[in-house]
Length: 461
Ligand code: 4AD
Ligand code: MG
Image (cartoon, rainbow, N blue to C red; front, side, top):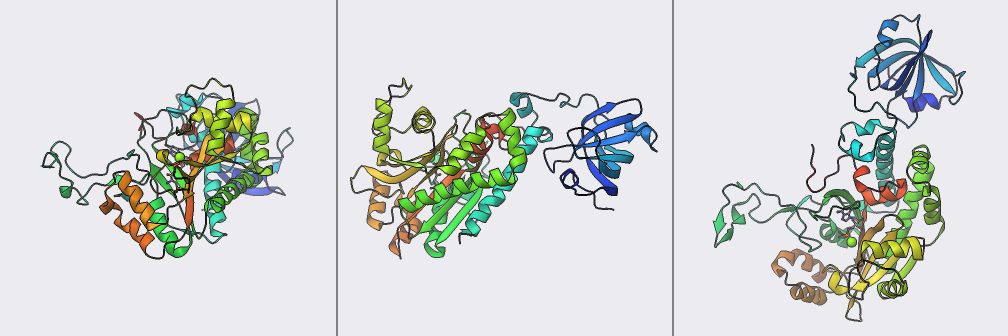
């Protein structure tokens, strides 16, 4: 079989091409007296290519049956388009319908609401917007690996099934092979010794603890993979299954961590602007008019670095009527984060040195006794995009914190071991991939940047 061309390669051609084959899906068709005009898209790029089928071609009878959504294969020549708006078009010699699309094909209109499209997640990639989102998703995944691989980081495949709750927040999905209609019991509670692993198991909420063990031997490591959280928060920024990028560096402190986070985000913004500009133009036009300015701002300016205590001060003096009153010791709510990054500074802000009581057990304790070396990167329209910290590398302090929080030390024996043998200052963070895509596209609901969103009460297929 002759290798078919892609729409992208044809639209970028520098000379006419004879006798080519193109396959794709029909976006629209218009019949005139002597010609039919068919817009074909094959997913290789945002644009369609126009196919002209003259009434006189061999199987013109077929052309009459082509409908929106049908899959077709076209044979013909690439010629310069006499029409406005496109350089090239295909003059068809023949067209074959590979898969018909009856009239109830749901994507007949040019524009559909996001809600409507969410309900047909199996078809929405065929729209301009979702095709663009998923192409950008793919390109950015590659860029993330390039960023780390060219900086000497090793990609570690951290486990999906784990026996540890990294964040200590208990928002985990249980993995079990026990018969839920007949759960074995021992001393009044579930007997997990009879479960598959002989102990409790869950889907990972973060690869961090596993990464730390590799960081303390390979130096610079990262993971990039699916992550699961059962937080029952139906917001536009949370999904139950998302992808997280987690770097971890040895012999590095919180400042190095902030530098890396800032460098990574700026690299990815620049990559998207340079490599995905066609697709990005769609978002700037139809989704968020301020997108180019937002991305320019990130590319051109250093991020603000702001201690948590000062952040609380700014919020308290802001005169804003927040739903949650900002108070030292409380977590920053989304409304607070967005005020800081969207209204007060109008650029990305890294808040650091949070109260230890609202942060995870593994964060390095500061000398003031009440804060830890944590950092969150906040960006306009998204809020928190990165969460990370310098890790507690001192054996005694870590052991004490595990005790204070009432965790079972036996569960963390291997983690404590890494502090016992050759421990070094180290740090890392997690970047939410979907939140990054929201930033890069201006899409305001996280459900619309992941192909198959999983949220409470929603698991279609
Ligand atoms: O701030 P988080 O919880 O940090 C950690 O999990 C650390 N263990 C990471 C590390 O230091 N290696 O999550 C990190 C990021 C958040 O800033 C957010 O971007 C994203 O992961 N995230 C979510 N994205 C979508 N849906 C959810 N439910 C998310 N929860 C966290
Ligand atoms: Mg966080």
